Image 1 (tube, rainbow, N blue to C red):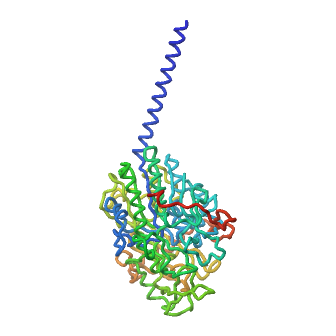
Image 2: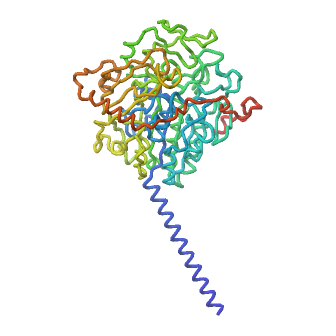
Image 3: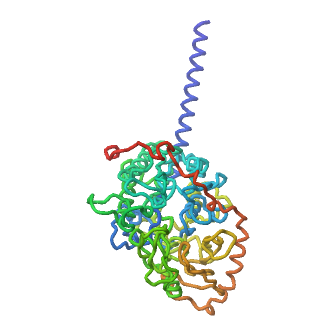
Length: 568
């Protein structure tokens, strides 16, 4: 009958409704479980920031209350090491947990006309987290290849707003690069795969970074866990200018008083302002306790840039200063020594009369070297309810450890191909109980050797130093930063320092007192090198046709401008 049919249909509809409710409830419980078990992750990464360039690590003049807050409410990591000597390599290590030598990220950094980048076959932290249903975003500097196949959106990130390389990679209005001969090498700002502004407007860059980061957080806070990689363009200096004084025009952050020239301190404090906006957004959305935040730097200060750069702090590299020709000169980017040996240390841009004072090679122990000023990075990690606030650790860690530690926290398998170590037990217990680093070895590679298969000035990419345990550093090859004229010195037996009691690397340890350790080092290096496949030097290859250009008809300039009001 008709009523029977209607009752049957009604019963089926009720059953379907109940099934739908059960399914939705089940999916809701899954989402709740994911939100409970998997913290949001915010990685704050500075560019070329020295160990004590932020207040909590002893900065003499910079005020960084927002970044300091991470240490006051979390764990201060006092023996954190960069995995590489230059930006592209260190960033590849941070995102993959693998030694850059295994990935071909050498020599030098990827240039503005780089042909290659981080290969798509490499698996980044963003890709791992996507496997755990994370939303992923990068805001800021990339520097791992800017051709489409190497951009962040092809490396696990859902979205990207930022600059493809360092701040000295192109001209901006009122600051044209000396090397920008045709006035077409304008510094680009990308939104995903598209250049949206060229040159980037420095007056609004910090506001835009803060806006994009906080907007991403707000869009995902209640949906599913998120990974935000806030990769600051700060504190890298601008290029050597065509016009004006190098030291007075090298920094670009907004001046607090709106007048005068930007300073390094301005750059540090603007970076802290962005970090503050991100932390405030977490507070406003009441997800601070559900979010793990890690702050560190890719590398240390570019010493030859002097006032444009940061501080070496206690990490002087004194042995090199005392044992290097005092007439050898290290120069800022694009400058060369005017004389092969002169204690006046005058630098010049070739073919011009543009001169400035450099520094002794023996003092150039920051960026481009593997002296402590370029290895020991400031690092802070906070996760309320899981990491005890106001604690510190001297356990030796590396930026290689970021990926395996994050994977352990989100309960993702850690692949055997990863070189880093899961430091969860240290992060969650600052005493370091549950993990021993007594015999852990870190290997530090660099280029810039006099001889080798690579073209001058690179020579070869080789292990220059190793660290064994929390205290001992062994030098095989000593040399200053970048590609200075001082020739590398080979040490047999290796030159040993206790970098905890002697952070300035001034007083070598007695070989006789460490004979057993010295006997182990050759085999450690041999075994490590056997683990490194023969790789193609990706950063070596470049062509001007790969320089980013929004429109050749307009000399690579856009008309898109944004006022402060949009980000007020």
